[in-house]
Length: 392
Image: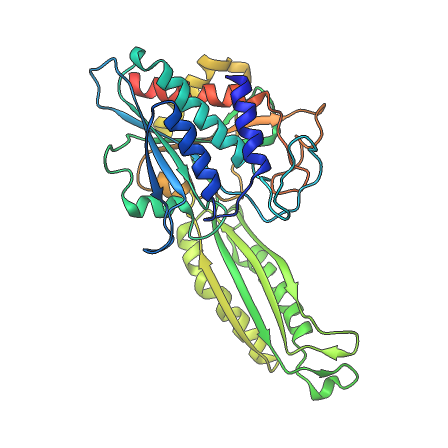
C-alpha cells in the first residue's frame, strides 16, 4: 500500500484546510473508505447545533467472530495558517494554509491501517474504530466535541491509540512514555489600556508600551519565582501589538500567548493569579487591563498498562533497538480529552532524515516535511497495535 499512502498524503498536503473547515478533507476520507466498503458515519465534530460537522467515524469489523471488543485509532484532519515553502512536487495549493504539523500523514496512515485491516477482516475478530477528527489546532478542540457528542458510546472502545510525526526522531523509530506526556495548554489574551497622544508629550499620556513591557517581564517571573522548582511550566507571549508610530503613543497594547502546565491545581491557581498580577501592575501605573484566559486541552495522560502493551507490540513490530522512551513535551494535544475518558496511548513516529530537506525541521514551520518512508511503518504500526489489543 506504499503508493496509496504516499498518494493520499500528498493529495491532502496539496489541499489543506483550517480547523473546523475540513469539508473537502473529510469528503476525501469518507469517499476513500466507502470505496472499500467500510461503514462510515459523517457529520461529527460540530462547533454548534447549526454548524456542519467536519469529522467522521468509521467502523472496520472483523469477521472471524467471537469478540465484541473495540479499539479506536485516531487521526486529525486540520492544517495551520502558515505559508509553505519548498516541496515543489506537492506544495499547498491554498495560499497561507499548510499541513505543517503532519496531520496529512496522520490521516493517510489511519486510512491505510483501516483499509489494510478491512482487507484481511476474515482473519481477526472485534471492531476497529477509525476516528477522523476536526480542529485539533484550535479551541475548543475537535476531540472535546467528539467526546461531548457521545461518538464513543456505541460501540464503546476499550481504549484509543494515536501517533504523531516527530522530526527529531529518525525514520524507523517509535517513541513512548507512560503517564503524563504532554502539557495542558491555555491561551492568554491581554489588552493594556492607557491614553495615547504625541510621543513628544509623554507626560500628557498614559503610555501603555512600557507598562506592557513591565507586565511581560513580571509574567515571566511567575514561572521562575512562583512556580515550584522542578514542576514543568512554560509561559510564552508570541504576539505584542502596540500599533503606534515613531511620533505616536498608542492607546493600548495587545498581547497574546500561551501557558503550559502539568499540574491541574497549579493551573487553576494561575487562572486567578495572572489576572490579579496584571491588574496590580497596570493600575499602579495609571492604566487598566483586560486579561482573558481561554482554557484549552488538559494533560495527555498515557494509561500505563495500555502504554506498556502498545510499547511491547512496537518492539515485536520494529525491534527493541527501534523503540525509544520519550521525555515529557511542553507541546499540547487535544488527544488529551480522550485520555481523560478512556485509556489512551499517544506515541511518536520518527520522520526525520538528514538526507531529505525539511524532515528535521520543527513542527509548525513553513519548511516542515516528513520522510515518506515512515508512512508504511506508521500505518502498519497502527494496524498491528489495534490487532494486538483486540487479540488479548
